[in-house]
Length: 215
Image 1 (cartoon, rainbow, N blue to C red):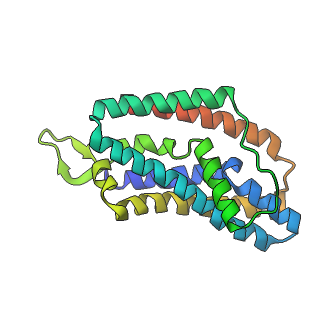
Image 2: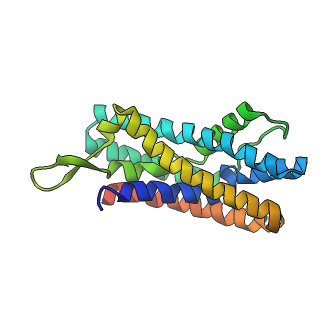
Image 3: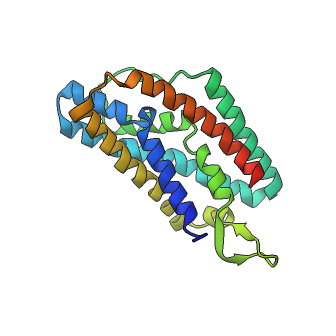
């Protein structure tokens, strides 16, 4: 079970990112409403998911390489500091990146999603999971498991699997929310929900930073 929980956590975080309108479904719905087409909503979801995957995949790889070259205590303190500082930054600077227009192609959506995910610190939220990921077959003599990031940095398959699980979960949830809003709910209810999710996201970033130091 200890080997399954990181995958479950990655999937749950993907679902959480999928619910957040800032990660893409709101833009997909807006494009669909502009073109009056459900197919436009669906087609927009895939480049949005790809941009998100590129953003978090870069963070996973970067942290994995950092673990190879940095001692674990320093990496943990560095990761916690970055998460907490980024949470404070988002708390006092809550503006979202602006996109200049609604005429976008596949490449534009990938780039937009990449920058939006990066600006929200989507990949940073995965750091506590990765730092505590038990490695199968690498059990410390005193019973402690060792992190897998060193392996992940040198294992494209594992890196892709971790990124893929998270992204697939995001794609399924953001697709369900986008279609629900487009078909049934409309955009009127979103102003209050947007604010609440942003505040919750900021708190989650800082809590995640604290978890790195505690666990």
